[in-house]
Every structure is written in structure tokens, then in C-alpha cells.
Length: 107
Image (cartoon, rainbow, N blue to C red):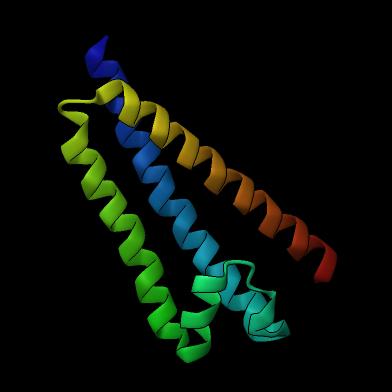
């Protein structure tokens, strides 16, 4: 049972990395076409307006730090980490749906 939940946790982490990459590509595509003021996250908007490569680096670094933190925290607090990762995966999935909706409307 624990081994199965561990596999699900690793799958959710992989999905988070994948959806973060898709979010990054969608953000870069959409904002380069329509303007950086469309980025809803004010922190990422700041970094993307300085340099899109810097914004991309920070976005990918944040998700990788999340994955590393989850790995270390899972040893002692597996249930909390599992629930938190499920929540983050849900947020990324919703964000991906938002990007798909905007893409369908604007293109």
C-alpha cells in the first residue's frame, strides 16, 4: 500500500514538472504575442519583463526546488506531502486548462 502511494506521489511530481513546462511555454507564447502585462502573476511578470530567459529559469528552478523539498519531507510527513502535492497538481492542471481556454479563444 505504501509503495503504491509512493508511486502515485512520484507520478504527481512528474506531472507537476511537465505541466510547469507547458505553462512556461504557453506563457512565453501568449505574452510574447500579446504583451507581458497579460501575465497574472506579478512576481513572474517582473522577471519576464526583465528577461524572458530569466523568468523561464526562475519558473523551472521553483518547480525543481519543490520536487526536492517534497522528496526530503516525504520521509517523515508522507500524508501531508501527498495531499499537498495533489493540491499543487490540481492547481497546475487548472492552470493548463486556463491556458488551453485562452489559446482556443485568441487563436
